[in-house]
Length: 294
Image (cartoon, rainbow, N blue to C red; front, side, top):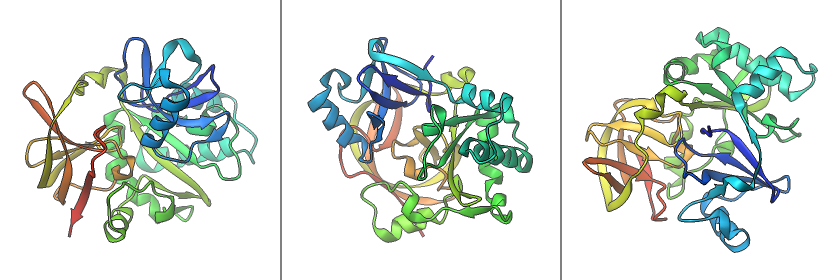
């Protein structure tokens, strides 16, 4: 079972984050994160081009890690449970990650069993520039985090994130990007260390998503956000007044929109039978964006 926010390392010394929940039988949909232990700092499409030139068997119309080349599979929930059972040294970043999760758990009434630890702390100790990437499993607890997370800013050990650390979606003006950053509630600083909280579906929730869509049209549309249940997941999903889900593969849009927000969308309309969705960050590489209308 491969699910979002898991990581895999391959026999080619490449490390990938698993993307989503639906994967081809012989591969895993993923994003490139490290090459020989060095962090990949460019975007998804640049990674796709790099792999196509150097590891072409990792690329189709998207990045797919061949299962036969996977050497290790890392599970965030298992790692978090291990650390809970054997607490690390007080000065270790893992200890701070546990303290952060416990504080969120106490303040927002989310059980520690719903947490996981991902990215570099999933398999290593992290470094001077490392941040803490927490996972919350299940839409119920993600919804609770969504509703209550801004209360964390009232605690002295929490500070909101600065815009330079937020992953910027493309095709936004500086003003539009700053407007989104001011609403970011799933990223911040805890005792001076950057952290991020993202959501992952439980296994019994996979059926709530439809996997296979095909591009059918380019769309420019103004609509109103009505639902944020999946806004901390990947892909980021918002319900709209048009009764067509707004889906973003740019994580910079997670945790930024609220019900009642008016947005201008430029994206790709994708179809699956009678179902449709508006996609931003599609494989078409068009200029796609979500702009908050004030």
